Image (cartoon, rainbow, N blue to C red; front, side, top):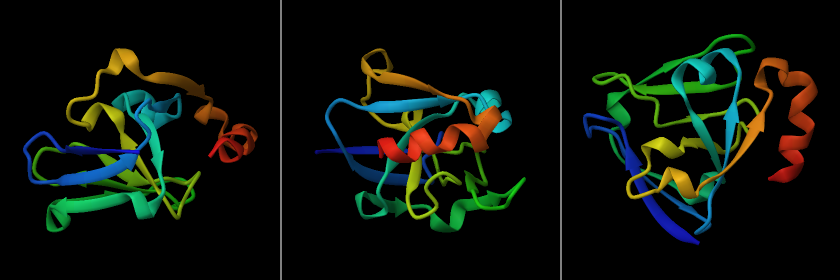
Length: 126
């Protein structure tokens, strides 16, 4: 496991995650992920640590209200959130991790536009 640091654009929100050296992320085509370009790195909650910025976060919920989308209130970047697929864990945007070469990521597609029929396979991969 490797420790990665990441955060928002303005630097108010900073976090650390422990994850494998070679990262596998998910590119989701649901309405919000498609618009924001979020690349999901699913992280156990015990491997996520918010270092700074809890008070800078604002949240947004839609559809079932299960996912809690958290954004920096200053710059608007969603660097992590609590996903509907894994409500006890975190989904970190790999694009918000420092020193990660996006070309070296293993990217898998996830059909979030058809979430109900696609979720079983994702949960089994974790």
